Length: 440
Image 1 (cartoon, rainbow, N blue to C red):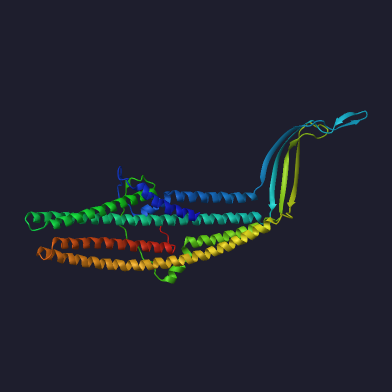
Image 2 (cartoon, rainbow, N blue to C red):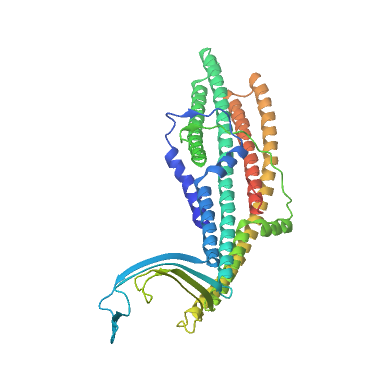
């Protein structure tokens, strides 16, 4: 079920992009920018996948109740009427002819059947259903975790796109100012048409980049609206929240924490218990069953007045002992034992996957942290170089094209730093998810 759920999440988010493209018309503006915690909370409460798992948990409760019903008696009411003919008669000399039974027979009874002891079958069946509920509860937690991861990815993509659009707009403003300045210089003969055309080409390129970013932003907003259950044309703004505590990066500690906390490991362990309970239940299917029964009501047919209704009852106990079932139980136990072996292998597979995921996410955190430092240094150098370029341009040493190049490097450095910080934040969230820390 979880695999299907996870495939659904991965399928619906890219599909949302198809639905969202071109939805700029008729957009409605959201009042306030949204925080990550508020989005996750709303998605966890209202998403159909969560509601679906809640209903599956409710179904598990019903299964437990159904299993416990074997402890309770079965009570029913029956009534019947029958016409019999011919009926047996007896003739006594001097006394006449007598019917041994009435032609019209009627009865009304209340029947009670109660299992006295079934040698553990009901108890084991209840334990099996209770274990199934534990698995469904664990599955619900995994669905919430996967949805939280989807929200986090969407959220920080929106953060990047919002800031990138602002940076591109600042680049356009700078380029347009330079274009106006160069056109004035051209009018006085101090600049050439080449410089004007070069600036216009740069403006066109930045406008195209900005258009691509705005399109991607609309797609991501639509995906967010689908997660929240809002109209896809609603325009949402998100807060720039990138502060997150770094977990302990010791590999041994991370791996052991993941083994204890990850839903995947807990699920496969619960599945092992479920398979063991099923094997035990199958082994008890051929146990004897001791029942008691009581029926009481009214019926006719009693001598001397065969048509008069009289109170009557019947009570007793019964023992059912299976002797031969065509080896069905034997083969069922063989299948159940194989299922236990399969789930044992699933535990090992899950363990190896988790170790690989923890090592990978840990390496990504360290790499992205280094990129943040390098990006900050790059921005600092680019800013210093641009300041020097402005001085040299004002002194007439370099051309407008070289100055624009320095401005572009500063803008791209800002964008690179933003991306590296978001990548670092996302890698931390992925590491938290990898070690089983709740994201909601």
